[in-house]
Amino acid sequence: MADGSEKKERPTARFHGRVEGSGRECMEPGCEAPGEFRAPPPEGGSFRDQPAPYRWFCLDHVRAFNARYNFFAGMSVDEINQAQRPYAGWERETRAFATGGADRPPAWADFSDPLDAIGARFRRRMEEERKDGRPLSENDRRALKTLGLATDADRRALRTRYSELVRQYHPDRNGGDRRFEAKLQEVIAAYQALRKSAAFA
Image (cartoon, helix red, strand yellow):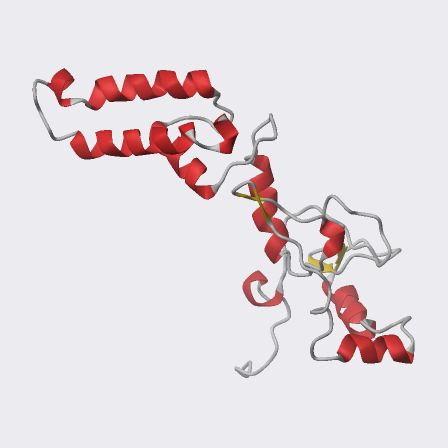
């Protein structure tokens, strides 16, 4: 009978980082097993405007990769000491992420994101950017959602939609029924916020 402490032969994705069914093959030359485990990208690549692609290995080869991985490989003694200082990196000038009220991503080459914590957030955000390049803040996005407008709506669409919703929710258009007053106030506040936004200037 199997002992409860015995290691599982196939670790689960939740606890061991397995990504199943991706269709990737192990990147180890000559290996035909599925590449279900990711490893850091090769050093020295030029990927300034997007994250560097990960390497993908099977379980055996990612274990071998991890066993031989050395963050300090290729560094001189002085460079290693510099990297190990408790405040290493803090003396560099920091970059502001906010531009014109919107959260904008830094160039990918300016930071390390081995767990894809920052990259996942900004990939989603960049897919939602306006085609004209004008920045949208979180408040802008909430206001657009309140009005039921797409990210790329222009000033004319904003005014048209505002007029439609005011007619829809105004008590005078509902026989004096004031049940929609709260919704009307939300619409007015959203319109006023977007009217002053840089995206609709």
